[in-house]
Amino acid sequence: MVHPSKSNLSTKGQSWFDLLQPWVKQGLIVGVTMKILQQLAGISGILYYTSQILEQAGVGILLKWFNFFFIIYFDVLTSALTTLMMLPSIGGAIKCMDRNGRRSLLLYTIPML
Image (cartoon, rainbow, N blue to C red; front, side):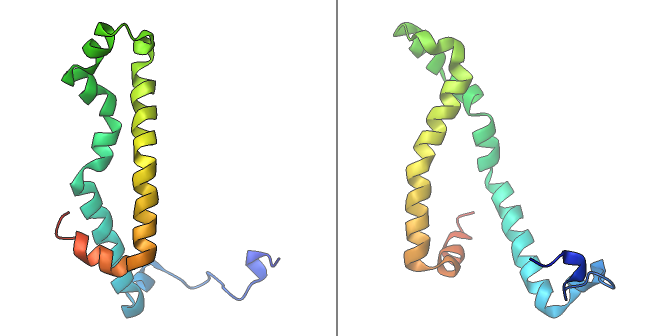
């Protein structure tokens, strides 16, 4: 293994202006645009507030009505159930990406974002 300071890839002389090179600029624009669209879609906020959303929707009352004794762990329970329900979807998305290619899926889903 080569120590980074002794490798051929020297960081000496690099600056932020290197991001404006034509071969880097296009990838940078695509990456930043994808992250902005992802944030505007709002899934991060929904996942963060899942337990509060379900509590306000009345799921806690429903669990009390069925004498569900894990009601004191409602936040942990909803996070765990959300994660367990997301896992099969993630697996399906990975298979879909392998079958169809990332570029075509990205181009088809951008209008939905």
